[in-house]
Amino acid sequence: MNAPADAAPVGTARPAWARVKRALALLLFLVVAVIIVRYARGVKWDQVWASITGLPWQVLLACSALTAASFTLYSSFDLLGRHYTGHKLPTRRVMKINFISYAFNLNVGAFVGAVAFRFRLYSRLGLNNATITRIMSLSLLTNWLGYLVLAGATLAIAPLPLPPDWGLDSFELRWLGVALLAVALLYIGMCLWSPRRSFDIRGHELLLPPRRMVPLQLAMSCANWMLMGAIIWLLLGRQVAYPSVLSVLLVAAIAGVITHVPAGLGVLEGVFVALLSHRVSEWELIGAILTYRALYYIAPLLLAVVLYLWVEARAPARIRP
Image (cartoon, rainbow, N blue to C red; front, side, top):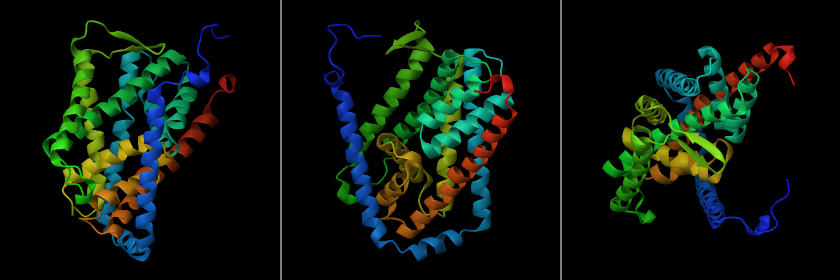
């Protein structure tokens, strides 16, 4: 389809905000890269390995159990989407697709994991694009609703003690927390009290979920983020208060989204080193995060690959591409 005659050229019609976001993403990526290089040069890698191998088996077992609980919980997000859209796919299939997409999302990015895998697997089970989009959108909203509430609450109530050279005080962090909570409350308020249930956003229809679903969204998402924080807290040997570890994880999560680095590779480590190296030794921090990656990223990805290949092999010939 041709553009209207009076339409602005594509190259000049780019919104200013898109350029600002790209500039901020590039800036944050460079800052994280500098942090990683700076600390990597002085890291005692033999001590990092010693900190990993020195973790008690009881801690690794507990962290593995928390990882399984987190993935089981997150794999239930699409069950909310089933209720939201009214499709009739079995619970086991929905959770399997959600698990596969989440594992790939963590490791290779949202476009491949959250989007491509959901569309391929759900469409082969008979769901149309509009239904899949609504499922995916609700899962995304559920995940970030808990993030906004937890990040807002931790910053507003108990701001993370930052290194002295950062130049940010607790007053500024509290206001940031209040702003995050305000966004979450806006969404909750719209879901609970808005008489209008449908909104058009850039040509895509957004339907607000049923009012009774919102508390479940909030509880499931908050619990999942807290499980992830608990894993790192245990791997750090409880040397840092749990709320502080959770706060750093939440900062690292948004930094990974902004920089668009697959699996947040280097971003997670860089943020933890930057924010906690004045309280925990660098090699213990890096050892804990590398172990966290092995438990929460690599192991589920290997299982997701096996599950995906199994699903592909069992797909009926008539719906194979």
